Image 1 (cartoon, helix red, strand yellow):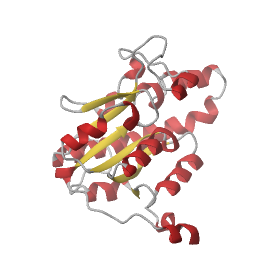
Image 2 (cartoon, rainbow, N blue to C red):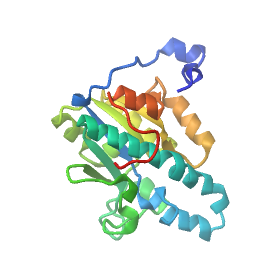
Image 3 (cartoon, rainbow, N blue to C red):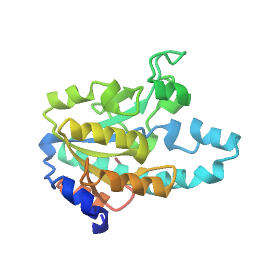
Length: 236
C-alpha cells in the first residue's frame, strides 16, 4: 500500500492512528463481503438494472474491476487462508420474507429483495465456498448488525479479520467500522475490494486506514498471513 495513504495531516495526527498488528492464523479469519451474483457479477440483478435504465456505461468499470482485480485477489486470499487453516466466511444479502419485512430500512428502501434460493443470493462460483465455510445471511449493510458473526468469531477464538468485498464505501466500510469498535484487528485488502467508482473506493480506503483498519495490498496481506500464493489464477 502506498505510504501516502497514511498521511492525513495535522488533525489525524492529533487524534491518533491505529498501530500495526500481526496476523496469527490461529486467531484470524478471512471475511469476504457480498461477493454474490446480485451485486458482484455482470449477469446479476444490479447489472441488469443498470442496462435497463441506461446506466451500464457508468457502472461497467466496477464490474470490470471485480472480474479482473477483486475476484482474483479474493481467490488468492481464500487459498492463503485455507493453507494456514484460517476460517473462511462469506456474507451475502438475503431476504427471507417475500415482503422484505426482515430487511433493514435501508435495504427495503433500496429494493434489495434476494430470495435465499435465487441465483443472485449465491456466492460467486469462482470463489468456491466449501463445506465448513460460513455463509452469513444479512439484511443490513453491516454483517455485524444482522447476523451472529461476532459471537461465532469469539467462539472460534478469532480476534483478527482479513477483509475484502463490495462495495468498499458501503457494506465493507460498515463491517470494518463495526469490527474495529468490537475490538477486532482488521486488515483490509485493497485489491480484494471494489466500488461503483474508483474515487469512492480510494476515499473509503483513506477514511479507514489506521482509523478503523490497516489497509494493505493483496501481496502484503498474504505475506502477513504467513504464506504465499501465485499472483493470479489457481484454485481456491
